[in-house]
Structures are given as C-alpha cells and as structure tokens.
Image 1 (tube, rainbow, N blue to C red):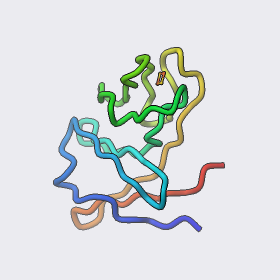
Image 2: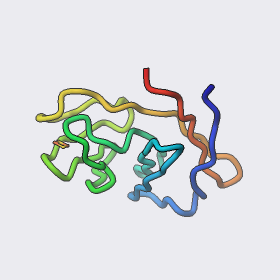
Image 3: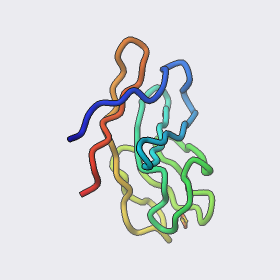
Length: 106
Ligand code: FES
C-alpha cells in the first residue's frame, strides 16, 4: 500500500535544484521548479540513465545523455529520442518537510 514518506527538508531543495531519493531500492527525482515541487522517476525512459545527472529547465528535466526533456507535471517526453513517459508522483509539504507518495508503477 502506498504511504506518504518523508524524503527531504524543504530547505534542502531551493528553487532550481533537484535531489535524488532512494526508497526501498527505487530511485526518485525531486525537483523544485520555481517554487513548485515535483517527483518523478529518476531513470530516463530511453536508456537507464539517471535524470539527476541532467538539468532542470523550467518545469522540465533534460536527460544528460541524448537530451530528451520530460515534463515534470505529466512525465511525458517532449523531445526524441525518448518516446515513453516517466512516472510522476504526488508531493506535499508539511511543517517544512517534503513527503512523497511512492505508489507502485502500474
Ligand atoms: S538516455 Fe535519456 S534521452 Fe537517451
């Protein structure tokens, strides 16, 4: 069953930064895009490369290997070569702490 899990302090993730989170062997990417928090899969859907190694561009994350950008809102790829979306996850902030709802992929 999915549960909210504390993954960071809000102060660790200022606008324009990302953080990689490991939860029970699954890796997630937390991102603060101009004050809006997002959580997505850390792995690119094209090849198994960490998106944490890429860069944040507005509300997208750009893969460092072949340059596909993914929407942090929808997980959809915006450029080739990636054609498959990445999963997105709900995030909430309570008392300056960031929580992630790490539901299982379908
Ligand atoms: S590995 Fe990410 S775009 Fe190719």
